[in-house]
Amino acid sequence: MASTLNPYIQFADNARQAMEFYKDVFGGELNVSTFGDFGGGDPEHAPPADGVMHAQLETPSGFTLMASDTPPGMPRMEGSSIAISLSGDDSDELRGWWDRLSDGGQVQVPLEKQMWGDEFGMCADRFGIGWMVNIAGEQSASE
Image 1 (cartoon, rainbow, N blue to C red):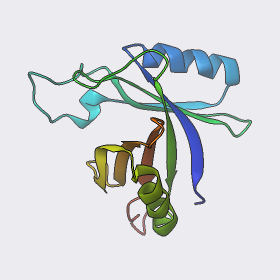
Image 2 (cartoon, rainbow, N blue to C red):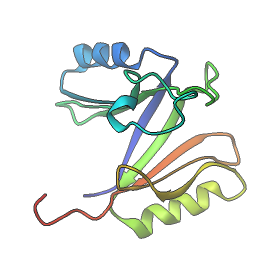
Image 3 (tube, rainbow, N blue to C red):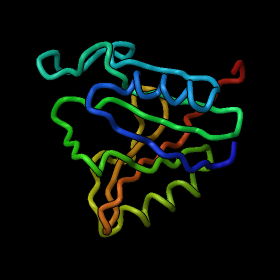
Image 4 (cartoon, helix red, strand yellow):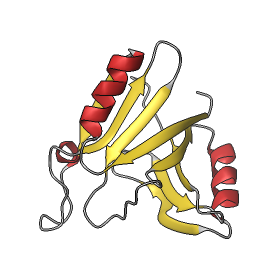
């Protein structure tokens, strides 16, 4: 799998509706995972179980659009609700990009293994642009 560059949009609480709209506009296959699908976390501050943790639309034109609802406690300001997502399985390339992007910036989520099996990190670069890096985990021979 080659590395990809995709827009990732954060919504207040209507990511599912927005992504269904984009599917109507662009066509393609929409996959949605909710916070409830993964469980865990502090129940008192947990996001709504039906909130969108991750949605991904793959269009026939080759576009990939990703989105999520903003969980409680995570800041979201209008005009800054888009982050750029870099993902793939080329660990060296992606780590190099992460190192350069986060240098002089602010790391919100350190690049480390996550509950879904991949390594993931979030940062704002020195110019305030949001980036997410996801390095695919080891795939089993049956996949």
